[in-house]
Length: 303
Image (tube, rainbow, N blue to C red):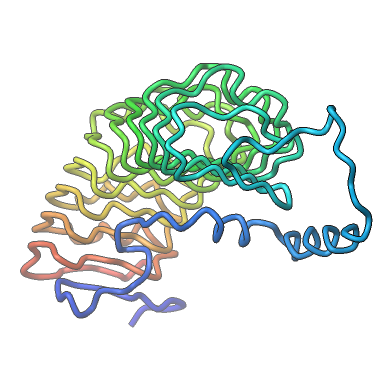
């Protein structure tokens, strides 16, 4: 029996699969994301503000920014998805909080694409064809907290991300390497989703995650053959599902003492060294479904 904790162990039967975070990451719709992201009823407050001012007809002047052609602009949310755009549109209102550019054909983010958007809170460029990002692209975005960059053609994590960033979704790109200092200055970052990139263990340079205080990290559907050893020690959730991990050795988890949920499902694990989980005193949920384990010899005496 485990003192002071209850460990949920999910093994190799498909019927034991949870619908929780052990499954591959699925990007939600941007509108759902926008509605959820404004805290304390922020969106409803904005709706009320809009309704209260609706009795007064607003006269547009040349100084009032227009909504980009084909886009939908309302309540500081600008939706330009599914328009076949090949570049970031002009005339985005400067008070925009949420900018949705997903499902287009944008190939590059240029230096002045987001000029003047100092109030932007969240940006989605998911499912485009972006392979190039100018080093100064994000310079104006001093308050951006959420960046959805999944399903593009990036070979590396973009440089000079805003220091305000809290959440980065960069799932399903072509990233093979994360260089030392890639996330330098991003002390506010709590969540990184970077699964479905063709990255191997050797692709993470020493110091790649230096300075980060992440709570959540997912590197699923990659080409990992072992548990990475230089990830942030602040992690509460670590998801390494759908890789090629062969075994969990004694020291593999030694720096991850804060982990509460660990996903190792859909790997090639044949052996978990006895005592390796003793380094995880906070562990509550462990996913090991669809591996090649034939026996379990765990020691939980220190958990």
